[in-house]
Each structure stands twice: as structure tokens, then as C-alpha cells.
Image (cartoon, rainbow, N blue to C red; front, side):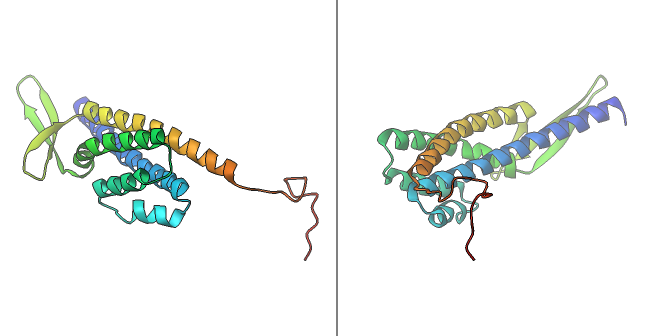
Length: 183
């Protein structure tokens, strides 16, 4: 394998790694949406149906989430923050779909002085565009920042729900070593 071949293989691996990050981060977003709806609805089954029964329909999933949050008892500030987040996700979902679903091809330009590799993706309408690791990293960073915001909201909602739970321990030792069990 020549150094050029090694460089191209490394570029391909970097590209695939970034596409994987995009996929995982958007899946994490779905999980956080589910967790938030579980807290808001106090019903995991209903939250699951809203988020996961619309598989393959990202815009529909976001719209269903927004409808539920908009009608929820959350404060205006919390609802506004969540709706802003999903608006930004909606703005990014086309790019996400291009990154994850568009077929890609590698092109080589060969001249006397160099060999240049480019990767292009073909969109549904037949147009092609150049794909770069840097562009996908930008998307990965943007969705990562959104995840950070929504994780904070989800965490706060879950802590509120936990503090609302009435849990009574009927023994002093949480390890269970001091309790008597009647059988």
C-alpha cells in the first residue's frame, strides 16, 4: 500500500466515523425526546408511541413532540426552550438525511503532478455535492450542542419527577442486611 493509498483509506475511515457520530447523536436525541415526554406525560408507553412508532419520519416525530409539549403543563419558559430546540433540529434534519442516507461515490482526479480524491453524494433530485469530513464535523458539533441543551432539560425534569415520588423505606439499612423478611 502506498502512502497515497494509506492517506485515502484514512480519509474514508474519518468520513465513516463522522457519519457514525451523526447517526448516534440523532438516535440520542430521540431517546431524550422520549425521556422528556415520559416525564411530561407520566406515561412511558404513550411517550414511546409518540417517539418510536413514527420511525423513519423525523419531521413527524418532531411535530408530535411539539404538539405534546405545547399542550403540556410545563412552564412557558420550558415549553419555549424545548420548541426552540426542536425548531433547530427541524432545520437540520434535511442535512442529517443527506449525510446518513445519500449514496456516496469517490472520484479521483489524476494529473501529472497529483492525485486528488473527492467524495460526492447524490441527492434524490439527482444533484451531487462534495462531501467533506469538515462539513460533517460541523453538523456533528451542531447536533452535539443541541444534545447538551436538551440533556440539561431532560435531567432537570427527571430530577423533579424523582423529588415528587413518595418513596418510603421501611428499614434503616439500604443494603437490606438488617431487615427481616417474612415469608
